[in-house]
Length: 393
Image 1 (spheres, helix red, strand yellow):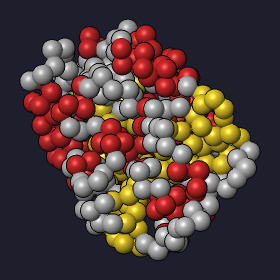
Image 2: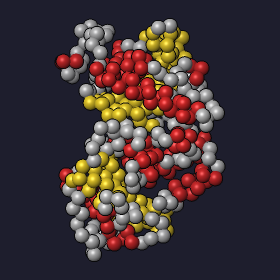
Image 3: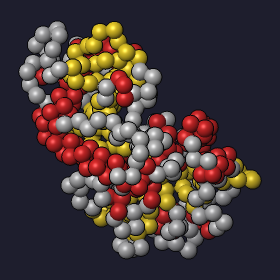
């Protein structure tokens, strides 16, 4: 049963022969993205990359998956992740005895078995037809992945070449809205390095050994769906305390250094298999603190200083009156707005903190899934706010 009668199917098995228009509009751009980055990475990367999807393949996968996302099975909308690769390119694949047609009906039926994070349905060509051959948890670098986030909302992404950290988002489709991540957003003036890590398009970042801890923290913050603020301040400096209301209820003394120590050990021995589980656990533990009312504060070495802290304007400071807001998607135009136009109390507090403490950054998660990174722009001489939820899905 489909909630929207305008999108209901004519038969019990398949959608009418209506192409999801956004699939066609984005297919060529996505194919060009994979072509370009395969060429770029192959010059430096010795291991086998995933096969490149062509525009027709991309369009078909998006179209079919979109219609499947609008269905319900036992009252629940399907959540699936589809990876385009043959079984021999996957790691420890679960292979079906009989390949299945890639249809909305089949995806809906299979969804309950593969909705847990990290499981992909493997799809590959069988003659002239795309078929589902099984499932896998391990995929090669630059593998095309399409994930259903919610009914009618799809994310195109690929695995980083080094295999560590969040997948790189290429585009987000929601109904007739298409957002294509702008590859050069991470190279604008004063853009925080965390934006570069989230976008992950630069050739070096595609195979770099960095675990991108702020990216992982951002993803984990967004996942708990309670909203929160993470302030990142310079190590060894105490000026941030001028913008925090005292006493701090949950101050940490000495600074809690679990994540900092794990990161140091990882950098000394950059093996994701060895450290990934420990890093993920430490990241989730720290990000969980951001669900407590107030701000969680760490230094730029990832040492925890406090949580549940209340942000207040510095005594000698003035109110923040404007900021530059932008989103790293093609076609976005930066706008100067008053901070109250960008969100609620969390956003205003974060903007004020960065306005007062200009060598810090603030990561803000909203309960509705929005995620914003605040930093100071020396070039623009104002607070800049990056809307990055498109990069975190």
